[in-house]
Length: 292
DNA sequence: TGCCCCCTGCAG
DNA sequence: CTGCAGGGGGCA
Image 1 (cartoon, rainbow, N blue to C red):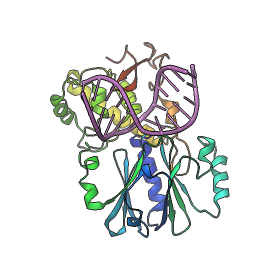
Image 2 (cartoon, rainbow, N blue to C red):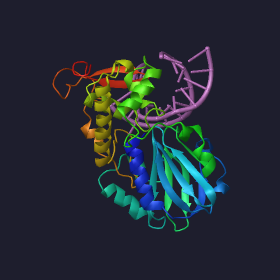
Image 3 (cartoon, rainbow, N blue to C red):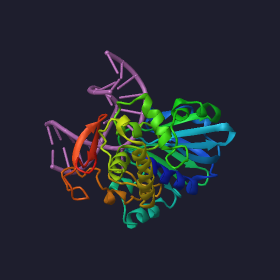
Image 4 (cartoon, chains in turn cyan, blue, red):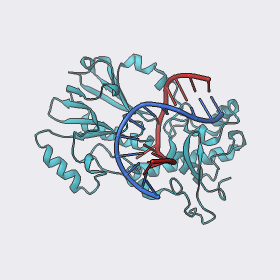
């Protein structure tokens, strides 16, 4: 699923919906996706919710924590109460943005973990492809996991600079620029969609060896990354596929893609046709005319 | 650095 | 039917 904007939207939604609630029970329907002891989290209170790259850390009382990764198709959907569940489901559909029928009817066959809170509200973790996970940690232990410790700077922090990228690139000069910016240990949170969109914005070919990207182009790329991610946040994320926010609603960014998944169509600058190639095993979209 | 894999569904 | 999908770990 989700890249930085989508995970950020979900994180903000969770803060609003489940902060301070006490976990009454956890139901795990697919063991594969839940790592750790259920007893460690039952009875604990949610004390903070934070995004790291594309992961969500939920801190609990007594020093415990949950780390959730949604991978490609994970969803976290909140239902304010079980007793009025029918009404809420109807609201979601009436809201006009049910992404699929199965989103409006929870739990469903893609619901793998269910968090029941003391006040009767429920959080569903759905994942069509079962790549995602929920892991239980001690907060101290979590800080030292590779997953978090090795992450590069968040794109919106001052730590992401052209100088920083040049230093990284000097260690792997031949790597394609797209692979550099989608490496989570270089920049935290950029994935396939926003890499393509950012490179288009900066007029840089995703195939360019990183060492051939100049300082000023890197500067432009950083500002493009920020503007693209900001726009995605403002539009509620990209729901090209299964993304919905914690209320089950889709975002609109997919209607504003300049280049991603527009293979064969005209470049927005009318200079050529959008081409699709594979970089690092992922579909990659660019305009060979304006992206050099 | 480049495949293959995890898994399921959908578009062409 | 084949190929493709927002991620990323593991293996040669």
